[in-house]
Every structure is written in structure tokens, then in C-alpha cells.
Image (tube, rainbow over all chains, first blue to last red; front, side, top):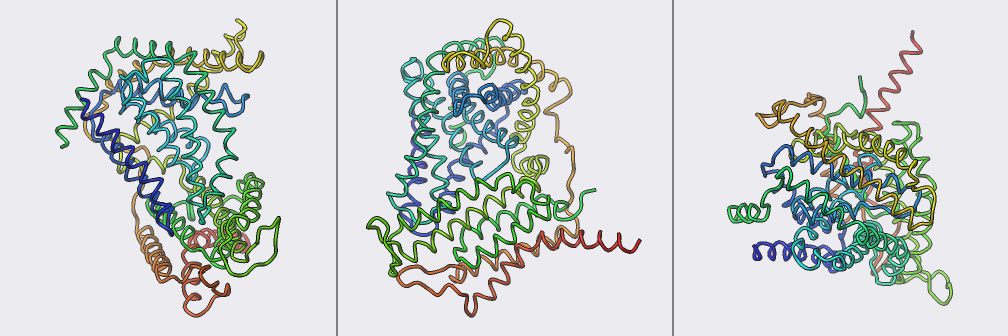
Length: 241
Length: 295
């Protein structure tokens, strides 16, 4: 189990590093390259999920959690840059496992963009939220996700990472000339939005993560959903190899 | 009956958008980008009279100004110094770069505005279901839940308001806390309901055999012809970029901005390629005018 998890973490981190460094190294066509690499790091998970047979009940639960993550912006519309989408994704991923976390994150981005309008940011948002869910799920059994402090740290870090990934498409896509001054200026411009996102994640995770995890956990046990997802993932991974 | 550009098969439209966005990213030349910007604006006007693009107008304008002013300040590689701002030299190359970034930005946003009009959610789902059927079903389910959850949310908010739990009053901490409580109620309610939805889907035979499509799209002869046209012109555009024709060389020596020789040919192909929706939409407009005049 540990082997499988380690490998998955390794692959996703490795690909993220390539995603960030490759465009900077290569001096000409960063946008296309980074886009292709992003898709390459992202599609295997999508394909793996679409190959997997899951129960109708589980499918509907995933869909409704993603819809809740997307809709949860609505009551907060009066509070600028406070939105619990990331919180919902993290909490669901911790209780339901990495694959479900990835699916919920990706789906939430996709669905909210279908209502708000697609843009060049759609794939990046899908990537960012999908990876947040995947990582939260992979770390699910560790100290980081089982303690409240750990969750808050994760939420804080992830709040900034999300903003940085979203800035990234603008930098590689639009600012053709990449130098550190411009990047720093651009990132400092978004600093307060990222900070607000990170702090609201911490706030929600601190107050509500325990009760939300209990609700989802109880529900998972009550209906026997996503049974032994770890062993099954391991099994399918071995078969895949 | 949908006519014109929107009536083509989703795959044709998707291929057009992929080539167009790639072309805009790759052709970094002021003339090419300016002409592309004009054409994309024209497509917007033809599709909905420019209503959507006006909504985005201010944001596009600010972003363009931002990139035109800031790029020369940061990009100081070049040979032709124009003037100094706070001891920073401003290069002609930097300004040209800024203008190109602004055009690219405008072009991409304007294209995505038309993308949202042309590739409607059902076409989007059709494209998705071709390669990722399970994902398409998930997206469809989630999309169906969004309006339902919003109705439920409104109901919960009204009930909770009577108890004094509201996002409208109190300090920011209290409001955020109340908002989350409301979502938590939504969570417990919806999770229980979702099981019922899942069981009802099973009872109706979900998972037995292949699913049919709600709205079928068929490849007709005109779709194939259009696909051929788009792929041919699009590939020529990419070939032109590979030869280095649609790209303005800034370093080491600034190339003259005005086009020369073979570049005119690729400009023509580029225009033929982008102009595809203008031709298909404009034809319908002309026909409509003609028939109104004759009858």
C-alpha cells in the first residue's frame, strides 16, 4: 500500500515540477509545452477513473459532492474571495480516498465553469482542484490529515498553491517574455487574494472539518460506499502494472 | 433549426478552436495579431451583435493597458532605446512585445466568448461522452444537481433565517460560520437524497449496455467538407509558423514590422482560416437580406 501511494505521490510531484520548470527552461513555446505536460499528467487519472466500474450510488454521491463544492460559493457571494469549494474538496477527499478526491475536484471545476463560462483557465482549474483532492486523499491516513492542525496547514499551503497555479497560465500564456521581476510583480499583485483564500480555508477547516468528515464517514459506513478503496486501488494498480 | 456556424458537427467546431488558439499563441507578429483581433471581433458581432463582448470590455481594456505599459518596463532586452522612465530604458522592442501581448490577450478572451456561444453545454457533453463516457455522465449528473441544490439552499436559508442564522448580518467571522452551517445542512440532506437517485437509476437499468444520446449529432457531407477545409488551412498556418513567417524576430536584430514576400501568403491563409465562421454566418445573413428584399 505504501509503495503504491509513494509512487503516485512521486509521479504527481515529478510532473508538477516538470510543468513549472520546463517552460522556464525552454525559451520559446512555453504555453503549448506546459499545456501538453499538464494534460499528460492529468489524463492518466481521468482515463483510470473512466475505466473503473463503480456503483451507481457511488457515482451519484461523487456528483452531488462536486455539485455541493460548486454551489457552496453561492451563500458566500456577499463575502469577497471567501468560498469553501477547496474545503469541500479536501474534506471529501480525506474521507473517500484519493481517486474520489481527484474526481470531485476536477468535476467541481468543470461544472462551475459550465455555469460561469469556459475560458483558458478551465483546464488549469481542473488540474489545481483535482490535484488538491488527490493529494488530500493520498495523505488521508497520515498525521497531516488526521489532526486538525495538519489539515489547517494543508489548507493554508494549498490556498496559495491554487492561486499560483492559476497565475501560471497567465504567465506562460500571455506574458511571453519570462523574467523574475515580472513574475514577482504579478504574483505579489495576487497575494492578497491568495492569502484570503488560504485563510478562509484554514478558518473552515478549523471549525468544520471534523463535523463534515464525521457526516461523510457515517454516510460511507451506513451505505457501504467505496468499500476498502485502498486495497482495491492497490489491486487495480498491480493489475495495471 | 440552428443554421450557420453553430450548426456544424461539434468535432468540426472543436478542431477549429484548437487550431485558432494555437495559431494565436504561435503567431507573435503585430500585423497577424491585429488582423486576427479584427476578425474575431467581427465573429462576435455576427454571432450575437457584440452583446457578450461588451460585458467583458472593461476587463479586456484594463488588461491590455496593463500589459502595454508594464511589458516595456520589465523587458529591457533590445537595441533601440526610445526614452527613459525613472532611469529605466524603454526599448522599442519592449513596446512591440507589449502590444503583441495585448493583442493576444484580447484575441484569446474574445475567442472564448464565442466558444461559450458556439460550443453549448450539450455539445460539450457530446464531445466528452465520445472519449470519457463515465465523466460525461458525472458532469451531466452534477449539472442537474446545481439548480436543485440552489433551490434547496434558498429553502434552508429561509428557514434558518427565522432561527437567526444568516449570512447577511453579524461580523465577517459570524457570517462565514453561518454560511458554512447552511452548507452543512445542505450536505446531510443531499447525501441522503442522492442514494435514492442512485437506486432509482439502477432500477431504470443504468449500466446495462450502451447508453443512447439525448441529442444526436451526425457527420454529414458538409461537416466533412468543413473539417477538410479547417484542417488544410490550419496545418498550412502551423507550417508557416514553423518556417518562421508569422513571427516577428525581436532579437538580436529587430525585423521590419511590415510584411514581406512569403509572409503575405501566410497572412492570406491565416485570414482564410479564421474567416471560416464569418463566411458561414455571413452567407446566412446575406441570404436573409436577399429573401426579405425579394418577397
